[in-house]
Length: 533
Ligand SMILES: [Zn+2]
View 1 (cartoon, rainbow, N blue to C red):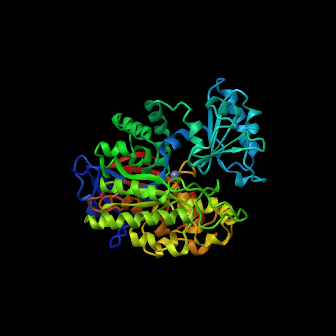
View 2 (tube, rainbow, N blue to C red; view 1 turned 180 degrees about the vertical axis):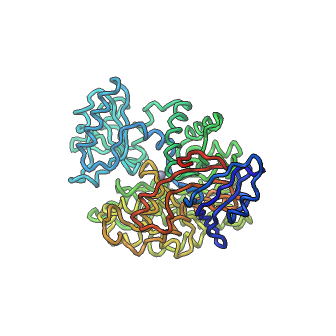
View 3 (cartoon, protein in one colour; view 1 turned 45 degrees about the vertical axis):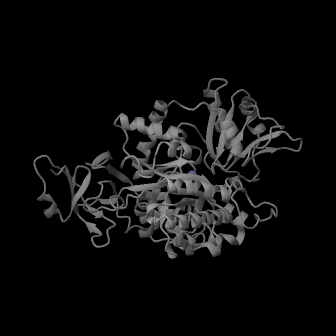
């Protein structure tokens, strides 16, 4: 029984010996045949739906290998201060929202980055108090590693100037010792933990909008790094028959014990919701200058950034997870954090080898790899650790990176370096830190320009080809999810996950990548969104 045949298309398979076909046939959610129109048409039977693509281009569905799905789902409903060029704009948007929000209720938002403001100074609670004297306000930074709150939020959570800094975090204080309203790393949790979270069914509702948005951007699978609440809401969507995206779910450090106690191993679940890896944080982020570095930040001889979980502790976690069948994915942005993560994997890989476990049985990964020490450049390849990178960060962070890291940026945001060393790369967006659209990521990887700046691309030697970029959003994540035998290409026996776009992405000028339109997205053989007849 053939359910659907696609005909008359420019179908890009990403399969080496059959890179393009015009037609394919789908049965029970799988691609069962590919070839010329005539040959595929002959397979049709009475119940088969024929879709004429009329020359449109088809790609394997794209995966986003790193995002925060719960946050993304909520972001669509909170105050958007994404990359506002001035603090005053953020404050004005908060003022508007406060106006529409019952007194005493939380106002949340995200996306500010003080690097983009004229004075580059951290904002304070007083900035927000003017417009929100009675509503607690919590605005997380674009990096996700700092939060800007008002006095009402500090009062609500009991933070004063005499509250000690939590481990792995910092409450910034003014000259008088009072909290300024700026919280770094784990200090953010002191406030965010007090904000009531949506019920599971409410969160599932929010996810529907986010899912629609993702499909319209060409995404058919995501790797999520949010909390168990996210996993629960995804399962509610599934129960309702409304889940249309595949999900690889990572397990945050806090929940490792619970997961292992339940006997959960990587691959648990199915091709819709599947358990991936343990997630650990080695350090902070560039924007907050908490990424852990070998040498200090430019102009701040004492600032080396911040370790969130130290090397010895990471080894314990990664070892324990690996012994129970879970690979690890370590967030590491600074060169010292990446170095430590590599040391951790070197140790655990040795132990795995001693137990007879081949490297491909544990899909370890480092998230971000934003800067790497030259001596470590080849170690991801050597240890078979996946470089999970977000090409969009190169264009959005470059000004801050040049400012804080100087000449060291020759080894920053560089998937080219990893590919040349033979490492596997998997690309994502880090949404809602960055926009979810993978074509923005592909454009950034290919050009390393944003709005034409800097002309010719930032550190242009790090540019990738279009093909390499596409593999990073298809086969790379498929490998990371241990689904490379059925995902990331269009070939016989593979999952029928594909997207239809309005032009041939291999033929367009790089600028035009941003203008491509996604016209349809099929997951598991069914159209989850279709805007053509
Ligand atoms: Zn992230």
